[in-house]
Structures are given as C-alpha cells and as structure tokens.
Image 1 (cartoon, helix red, strand yellow):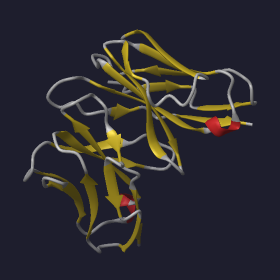
Image 2: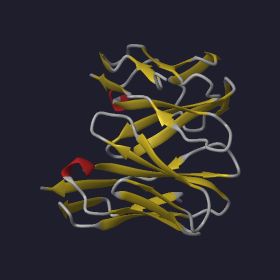
Image 3: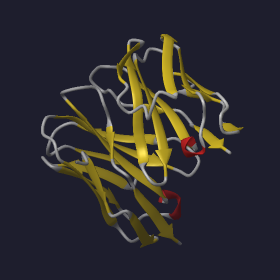
Length: 114
Length: 110
C-alpha cells in the first residue's frame, strides 16, 4: 500500500494568496483527519471526516480555512487568504473504523507564508 | 484542560542507558492509547496501540505498557537511531477524535 499521500510537500507563498493542500488517504480507510503542527502548539486537529462527511471542524482556526472531501480517495484543505501565522506543517491522516483504528499519517506539507 | 500530558519534554540518554517516557490522560472511557515516533521532517509513524490496563506491547528495544491513568514507553539499551520525538495519543469511546500530547524529544548520544 502506498500509504497516505500528500501534495505538495513544500509550499512557499505570499500573504494573501490562496493555498490548497491535497490528501489521498489509504484505500479502504473511511476516516480522514487534517492536523497542523507547530513548535509552539504541537499537533492540533483541524477537522476530521467520517465516510466523506465532516464530523468536527471545531479546530479550524477561522473562516479562512475550509476543507472538503468530495469522495473517499481525496480531500483538500484550503486557506484563503493565507497569513504568515498559518506557516506550519500540515498533516493528513486516515484510519479505518474498527477494532484496530490505528491512524496513519502522510509525510506532511510544509507551508511557509511570507 | 489538556487531555494528554507527556513527560519529560526532552530526554538525553547515553547509548545503552535505559529509561522510560510517560503519557498520562485525564478522561475515563479510554478506547485506545497510541504511541508514535516522529523523525524530523516526517509524519508520525505508528508504533503501538494499547486498549486495556495491564496490556503490554514490544518492538525491538521498545516496550509500551498501560495502566488506568497512564502509559509508559520503556526504552531498553537505546541506540542513536532511536533518537526522535515520541508522541502519545488517546481516543475515547465518545467521539472519533485522537488527542495528542506534545511529545518527548529523545536524544541518544553515542
């Protein structure tokens, strides 16, 4: 299995620009999570989906952030407009609801907003 | 209130010097406790899942144990390649969220 795939791996953009991060979960997994990791705050859950439906988006910082999951194999996290404080590593993770429920992470997207 | 607390924040060990990392959680109704290893520039890598008090899991030099309120990750005779940040996460029967601790940064000196 290819594991969780994220793109791009690195993104450098200027303040005010739109940023779109992409994630392909592991085939057969029905829950998908978006996290943000910074030195100051560690790993923070932004939003998670179950069977393509957003279940809890209470971690989304503000309206500038939005996430979609149009099908079981693809999700996006969009920031519009981006700000320097959004600079962080964004991880996508997936799991299959069931006995094991182990969460598997992608390699992350390192975002720098200038 | 933090759901998961890890200690120490950082740990430096000589190669071969065994030690333990701690993960404590504050809410009852545990569905599972997870240990991850994270190397710089990479995503967290799954190590263990523990479900009930008294359970133990082992992998090479690592052994994870679970009590009713905390988990320990024991590292026996560590090597420099064990240097990484170790993250703990918990999941409860209510809800689907994973709550992560802030991690323990382990450095093993040759």
